[in-house]
Length: 260
Image 1 (tube, rainbow, N blue to C red):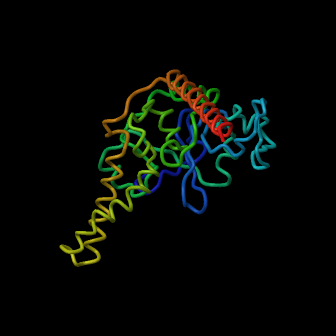
Image 2 (image 1 turned 90 degrees about the vertical axis):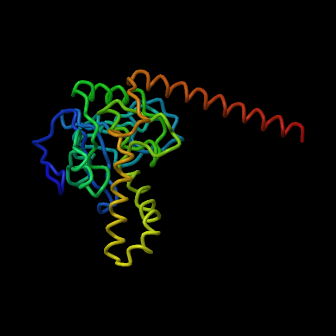
């Protein structure tokens, strides 16, 4: 892997690697954890949340059906964590490997987010254990800004979670989306001081890179180490609490209707 690309060949893959591939003509990237045996555990939006099937293997669309690996597409009911074969994960896209423990200077040279972090990866056994545990227990509700496929892979690799859920998540892609308009906004006053378009562009690019760096999990102060067992337990509690709140809302609505 070099400064310009993180592209790798399949024979270079190792169990525990955080891999990704680009979708929609490089519009965004999809991330997962390679667990060996040509299998990838990844996190995606639930295609059919209304499905109440009790089967542990669900194929919500024809694209989930794999003719080579019978267990490709395995997931628990109402969970977005999926086990796929490498071919189905890539969908004819190129293979890239996310970098960990990069220096700040290298991080800032990576103009595109979602390719590296200054945080250190945990051991291979820990990474695979988290991925397989979450395959059985879920990773909560998918959120493109706060809980997406990159967030899932980053947690599997580091065990780090963000305490402040009001801000952007761990995802480098999400911080890039937020950082671009923020950089443009902050650089606007510079137009008065730097009349050259090239100068303004340089300032904007610098602020964009710094905003990405400030949200990287390797330098953030609002991250904590959470065991995967505690994470799964916390998600179960939240699900129960959410269900109770929904039941209370339904009871209040029925009481209101009765009064009317």
